[in-house]
Image 1 (cartoon, helix red, strand yellow):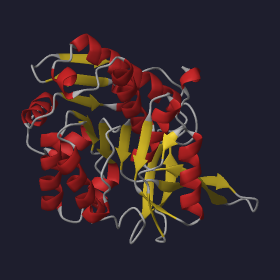
Image 2 (cartoon, helix red, strand yellow):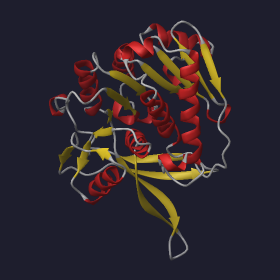
Image 3 (cartoon, rainbow, N blue to C red):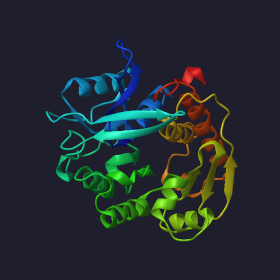
Length: 308
């Protein structure tokens, strides 16, 4: 099972109200949540580890996971409120205002992290859960304890507004990158994390030197490039799509990559360390194909396997 560890929240999407002004409609979301949903819909055995509220929004999130065949046995329930993200869309590009203080997901601590069953073979981390404390420390502790024998993928999806202590964040993320097998970064992530005057390829080399077997760089409409530790690279152009909005695109891309590697029997530390350029290209292509469907419709609405 691929266990997605991180935030699950409610995206409040603007929609016309009866009075003629814009209102907001609640949609399930969160970077890690979206990846779990996409994996479940793609027919992959997937689970979610997060803090969920018992409030009405938490129930909405739990129902969505169940409906997409995502295992919820590792969910940590509490009476704290759910995280809300109010979305503004400009030309299909999303910006967010978050309400996250003292939330069910934010307030997880290392002692809350469960002992994982042997059925969990892969861990996925990412999003704001790696920036917001105390949950960021909880997920880092889980990875340090459970990541040695499991495949680990990280998509930092860096949002500088959430980072209160840059030095602590960089230190924590560096430690996690050193234990990871796959890192997916956008060009914006990479330039924030490594602001030195280096080319993108040189910055990727810095990440690979830290330990991962695979790094995938996404550049929106300019496609994605996969890098292997031995220096070989593959480039995959963005799949053509009529873009409605980009909400959940990167999260769905992550699921597509993991789903392909899982189906190909390559989701192990040994196989990733010896991955061929052909296999990496196929995984990145699948990620791009799945993401193209997501951007063609409103909100984070990943496709089901039958839609492919």
